[in-house]
Length: 344
Image 1: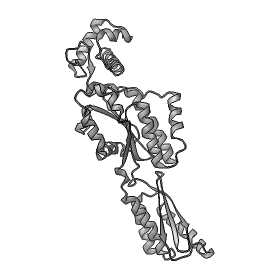
Image 2: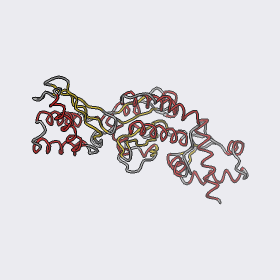
Image 3: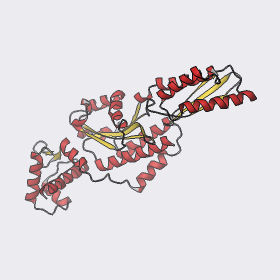
Image 4: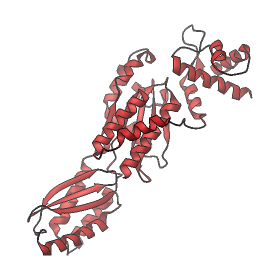
């Protein structure tokens, strides 16, 4: 009972400090929360929490604030992620619906998430190295040119016009093109890009029925997709929100802003979540962040993908004084909806 009561006191301190940004004293806890204990008991519990390194007294204040360890214990003990309101869910659906281009979808995603959380939102572009081929379309453009369109499971589309030695617009050419389309898709469908590339090379070397120029053109498009390295790309929004929280960074915002400018750093942080086999919400608090400039912040992330395949991650970065239950719910909801768009 004593331990559970102390955890209730810790939760109350976290909630009050997140809401007010002021150190929390025992009187405020008794006034705002139904703890059903005496002031002396609350003071004893606060002293025990301080001894455990879960709260500290800033300067000479009589109140206490959570430490990184206190926030971590608070997050770990959450029984469930707070459900979002109907209005918040509707806002996500309305804002993200209707965008077919992946760039537009991801841009809307970070803008929406930064607005919902009032923090910095960041999203990793789908990793093409993990992406699978959904379909390859072959479209004759003229007697000597063919458009190759490669559609990935992430929704990304790559296309290129290639020269051919066969007139696929002619009646006999149409049959040959349909046959080639079937063989190309049989060799690549639902395979990762690297695996699809190897299958196409085998098809190019061994299939005497399919024109070499056609398979070479398809190989070129897949090679170009891999070479683009879009996994190194991230997009973010809401950096200006950090200015509202400047009091949470007693020294300066400069290290945080410097880290945010280094997209490779953000990519490494997000890639850990995208590589997880099981989707979920991850929270890194303060010193848990490996990047020095971000050790005064918390990062809440969740992977997204197509089906069971995680291809990227979306997240929110802000001060450790963060509404963790609400932020976790918002990140999870946006990641879930983004997965539906990518899967479709």
